[in-house]
Image 1 (tube, rainbow, N blue to C red):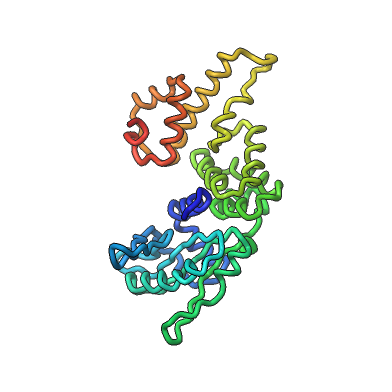
Image 2 (image 1 turned 180 degrees about the vertical axis):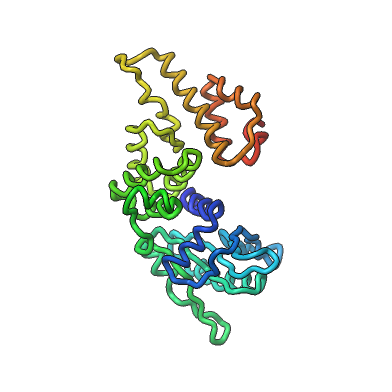
Length: 298
């Protein structure tokens, strides 16, 4: 059964499949063909209607008509013998589909789980011993500088997931996002926030609460606009409500921009002018999964 953290990690690899290639090439020394197109492929390996046989994410490297490499990305947060025995089946199925070299990459935020899934798996096929490539906490490089975050934001989000209990790591990540294009920075924050453990999320939230940079975790939605005091002691309640509404409307529009969803001018004006907090909260909940402006409004 998936969890919010499991889903967040999968989202990162589905929306940034080139990250899997980068991990195999740079962190694990796997000879994946470089400088080739990378795309998501179907993860439906079912051979019969009653058989649930779907890995988390499947990535193909190379042109669609002649794939050069296949990658199965599996997120595993705890030890499970049945799940571990599925891994060679995934590798064999994708090899049969693509007819090219295949690697199964397990993402394990937990060190014990990483050790478990890295063990060789002896199958019932004579001579076939399978070994997955496992990315555990020890394999993810720490963030060295804000420039490093800007150069490799996907890897930096993974670093927050595994090293984020060190507050300096989170502070460096947030500083690095200031160097990322403004339309992309909120999405990388979302990746890091979604994949992080609760203790790391709290550090992210504390930094957001003391910052004016508009990010979009659930915490930031609630507290957006708290730092907009114009110098007067408390300000008026009405002004605070307007500031929050304005911030939420801006958040909706920025997330739409990050997801590259076209917004007609009349809809943009409607969102910007909305002062109903319930309506704005509804849009904020919908916009994360929306694929079109219709998904947001209906």
